Length: 336
Picture (cartoon, rainbow, N blue to C red):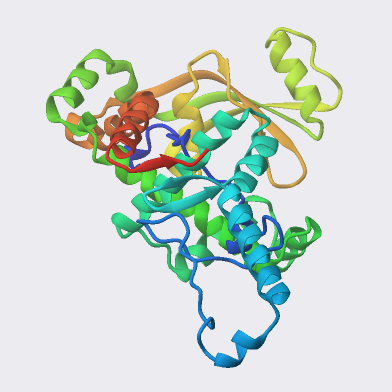
């Protein structure tokens, strides 16, 4: 039994900042104008090329030159008007903010803040040289397909039925994986891994560091998740519906899948486990009657779990403090 898998510890990445922006077209598709290159030191840098390529232009009518000048001026005004702010020289447009407002159902200020943090996240990914390989991406797609009881062909068909191309799906999944890896690095670099903090948690929470070899349980199986939810809500002593099958079971944790073993570990005695899918179209929950032959996990083997638990408990503050420091050292210029 891997003692580091005492509990299912899931990182709830509250600052994932995944915003489904369009590609570079989104930032330049303000008024049908061509994309312009923006430098860090200047908002807009327009050239006046071709003005002196041929002296024959001098003979063109004043009206034609005036028309060109007027069009160029309007382009300048529209492009500048489309940019709301710069984050370390990178523009965030009014169009992008408007999209974020609708997506998040929020006001302009919060939408702008969201996009600022998204840009800072991308810059941190580059600064820390975080990358996701094609092999990692393929592995994650396989895992997601398996979790949905699909083969790859079925999964890809399901993606396309949602109106998304496979390349778009891979791109968005990669963004999510990059964000998760960044959050993991931030959390692991925090001071929650200091020895004193780990030992303090270990001594104050002894009940978390015991592992039973066996679980005495009652298994309840049904094709109706709603029936199981209702039964669990009413309690063990309530009458058993006809569409739920009950069976006594004694399980050895070493002989069951680690994910299921983790569920039993986090479920207190005299309680129901969460309702799970059994993979054959049925739903199942277990009532834990007793935990037998309990062993104490020593501190060294429990370290990994404690680090993850402390990160899970403090991640909001850890991530908030980290990005506040990043934001403080960044150059954010509001145009309007």
